[in-house]
Image 1 (cartoon, rainbow, N blue to C red):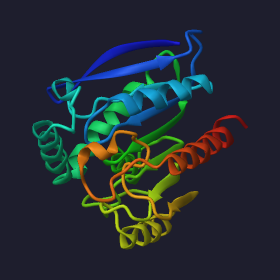
Image 2 (cartoon, rainbow, N blue to C red; image 1 turned 30 degrees about the horizontal axis):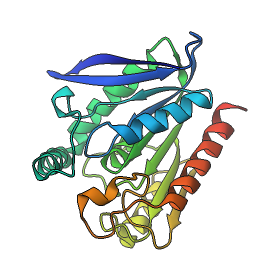
Image 3 (cartoon, one colour; image 1 turned 90 degrees about the vertical axis):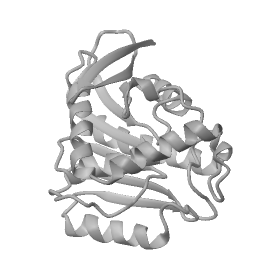
Image 4 (cartoon, helix red, strand yellow; image 1 turned 180 degrees about the horizontal axis):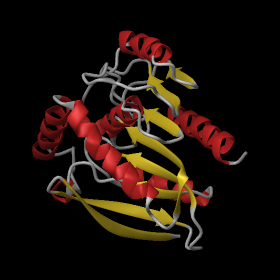
Length: 244
């Protein structure tokens, strides 16, 4: 497996992504990973390596800028910085989604990625970014949101064309049940061609992250069963989409 850092500048901010591929030089179906509010780290790296083992090329995105890599949200200062940055971006999601589009375009242009066969997945805030990218009318095949924020869009949306899969902890304090129902209604009204929501009972936020407890927030905790089930379901969707 090859892993390398690649720099992209968007509106004056340098983003330092990690690109993973199988080393063959062949353009594979691609997966863009949009990270949690802590920016890319160990969870994104682990999922990228898993995806390469299954035959995909991966871009693990830096969504805040290289000066915000390596955050430790177990430290109050880093946690507050991450929350402040996320909340700033949430104020104008219509503007911020343009950065996600630029990252998607960057990934499509990689020599190890088949630009016509791309999925986007995200965790936490990255899950919301994934959904917003789909809402914006962006051209990609699969949108996977893992314990993503589900806030209704505050920007003008377009028809949702990717297949959408949302993996959600029912006890997630950051996405209450009303948000889940609203998302289903929204996707139906937007004419989404293929959508599904998996809600895991007794499961909270950040269930894919073994270090979730470091945040010390109620109902933000790792859940091995939900992590495994969501991963299996997402892989099935990728297989059905790209291996026909």
